[in-house]
Length: 486
Ligand code: SF4
Image (cartoon, rainbow, N blue to C red; front, side):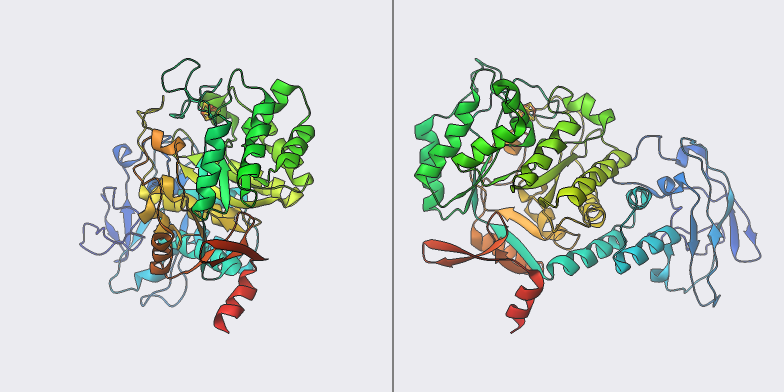
């Protein structure tokens, strides 16, 4: 919480929330200020991306209470009041002026109440999620998220060794944010054949990959059998590699083109060697956003249904959220709550991955990339809202290595893999390398104060011996912590 502003009397403004405003008041009783907030100091309506300002905290009545040398009891101070959608701030007793108080003890009552819930392991409500979004106290959010992260995953930072394959970039859909897709007949359009897929699988095996991550476009002409064959080709070339393939959007497309039920599609892929589903295609579930940016592809209901059916069949899956474009706090919290509800029902999700929007070469290239603050805020809020997800991943390809590393203190426990041949986000301007070495990933995790643990796709501990590897027991962070300590 900022503490920089001073009032006309030169005293420190303890709330620190109003340094964007003009204090035009007078000192009352030597302690209080009357503060008038002119319209131009108010953030524009709708400007509620992750860098929420103090003004946005005023969407509902806020109170701050604190204890300091001047008072031994908690003093609630009404800061200001604003009704939803009203851009005009009222005035009221806003600043408590004194000097020398330990400002670290000040926290909004709302955040303090949320913190109590987090400490007690009580589920956060939709409104709590909005309050977290409205807060600009990044460190308070981070410390709460870290509490949950360490409760679930102790001091471990997970990574894996994987390779990506995108069998085709040709896609019938034209999602506004997508820089990867190509039209049929375009110069950059491609479809990988059996030899290319098998070669990529053999390369991955030779490099010690435990996982192949496979997603791609929805080709106008390829039959469902091609996508089944891709899995079979990989399985024959590198039988021990786990195949995490096809987003819910692709599965839904396969059902459409083959006229088969979702369950049949998934069973056929599992019989071919499919091991789990990635979490892509979720974007933002809320219809206000989804209809604008990717209205043509699988609906929210179908995305969730694919995962529901997959979980019923025993497949584990991941989930994502593409943030930082036209989404607003309520859309993100709605997204997280929908995922949490399905997870309550099935328990089949492993990991949630917030995906930072990359605008380059997309039809939304006028929108700037999300800021570092937003990246960390979304990470922390995801950890706090998704109390039934075991893992939160900082996907370094999209976040950048440095932010991903810091995110290990903001709720993330996983930093993804060594990743070779990533195309989707590099087409959209990701400046990260195509791959990092295991040594580099381990160094980043260790430097963040975490213990690096290699995992496989299903979170079994991986043990390596020269060029070979073995999946060991499923990771139980408490047991692992005991083993490490012992
Ligand atoms: S995001 Fe997926 S479905 Fe949408 S255009 Fe790109 S490849 Fe196609």
